[in-house]
Each structure stands twice: as C-alpha cells, then as structure tokens.
Image (cartoon, rainbow, N blue to C red; front, side, top):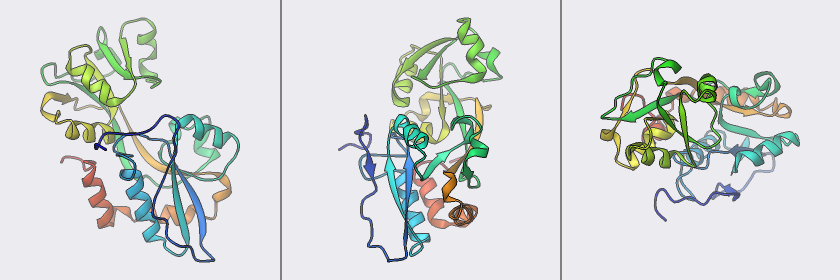
Length: 253
C-alpha cells in the first residue's frame, strides 16, 4: 500500500498491538475522525496512532488508551448517544453549541492555522474576505468558512468543491481555482509528500488560527487532570518533538 492510500468510507481503524492489561488498568476509548494524512497514513501509521502510542507509554499501568478512527457522522452519533470517550485534536468551535462548557478540555496540544494557499505564480496575500473578491476558492466539500458566507452567497467569491485536500491542491495547480484554504497540519504534510512546496505560496496572514485539544465527555472528569497534565508537559517531551517533525508540523521547518 502506498503512503497515501487510505481505506476510509465507513471503515473503523483500531490501533494495533494492544498490550496485556493489568487488572486495575482502566480502558479509555479515543476517537479520531481525521481519516486523511497526517492523522492516518495507511492502515497502521499516522499522527493519531503515534500520539496514542506515546500516551500509552507515558501512562502505562494506569490507563489503556484504544484508538478508534471513524467518520465524523458516526462520532456525532456516538456523542448524541452520550457514549463516553475522548476526541483527539479538536477545538470547541466545531464541536457543537456550547461545546466549550458541555465537555472537558485539555490545554492545547499544538497551535494550528488554516493556510491560504495559492500558486507560486499568483502569490495571493490574504488581508481579509474582501481580498478574495472575484476569486475562485477550491474547497473541501462540506467545509464551512463563516467569514466568507456572505460573499459566497452573493457569488462575489466562487466555490469549486472537491472531496479531499489533495484534490484541492491538484485542482489549484491545474489553474481551475485561485486559492484553497487548508489546515497547516494537513497542508504541510501533503505539500511535502506531493513535492509541491516550490509550486505554491502560503499567505503570511492565515485565514484563521486555532488550537487543537483533547475533548473529554463529561463522565470522564476523573481522567481530565491526568490528560491535562500529560498535555502540559508535551513541549518538553523529546519523543513528541520527533513526532511533530516527522509529520512536518514544526513551524518554520
């Protein structure tokens, strides 16, 4: 299987190589709904898997964390059914009404941002929604851009939908759009994997900056301090730094 090959649709991926449990070890479900690189790269590699392996090693004997990667729609169903678990790499902005208060949140795992990407010939500099007037945005189907909604509704910005971020980059570089907006965590991995870094331009000003966290359902309040402490120590964790570098998530490199 190639690096970029993924079996997604409605399949569920579960972290392999689960070690034997001690009798007093509590099993915790971790949900990941990002089914594309760098979060999942093939069946047994990716940022989500490396993160959970690190978490299991750091908290060995106390908890056993088991990763389930699943589509967002299924995650929404589980949350509506009040199943208990931890959602990886999310922000309360996109987890429903009053999510910041309804769920428990760790400190930020890392700072991410939505990059405004154009071709190296165009070199689009983003100054705000008005700077995109008259342009065509190549967007991932279903992705929402709140600050662009009025201009999209008035057709002042045209929208060309595709299914995946990789397709958006392909369409952009074929000249069928003027820009695409993608999370830096996804874009940097794809640009490196597709060898496109010299062919695109990232605006100095991002479309949006945000933080990624772990989100705990309310019944896991006893776990919250443990995971928050783990996250707060990540910036000094050499293994975590290597993971970030592996997936091209180190700013400025």
